[in-house]
Image 1 (cartoon, chains in turn orange, red):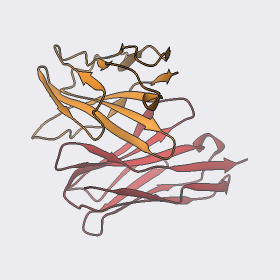
Image 2 (cartoon, chains in turn yellow, brown; image 1 turned 120 degrees about the vertical axis):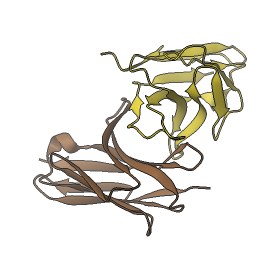
Image 3 (cartoon, chains in turn orange, purple; image 1 turned 45 degrees about the vertical axis):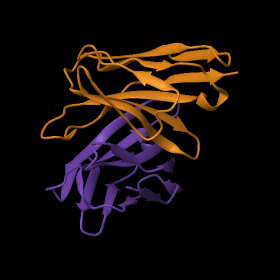
Length: 116
Length: 111
């Protein structure tokens, strides 16, 4: 059971480049989400999804796009990378019922992104 | 807007000591509260999940309590070990179906 898998683990980009962080889960979770973790700022929600074809914005969505074409995958796209997007990115998933993610949240190992 | 605060930010204790980590939140309309552990350079691992209707959850040497009315949760670690050294974060699932995280307590257990 792989859980939540993120790729790549490390990435260096130049300002203005685009890239996609991949996230896949094999637990049949409806809810998937992306966070960024910065020193002194804690974990902040970027985007989330409660099922295939459904996405919504979190606290810090600007500069990022997501899509959810399948239950298993939830990629995060950086459209035009900026140094302010240097961070550690985490994907997380859980079961979703009754209008809320009521199950425990499972995290990937993280993707460390540096934008020069 | 939900705000989650964890005090203290860092804690150092000798091995074998019992300890309590604190988490407070401003909006009591929550679905659940979770405690996580994060080791350096790693992702978060869920330790305990307390639904809004529950008062506490236990797993091994860990016990978490929830008092929704006062907006507080505590994580009790019994007989601490050096392997417990990590950052502990709490998070609440609020009415917007989003989790809000605290900044964490960095715990060091000295041999």
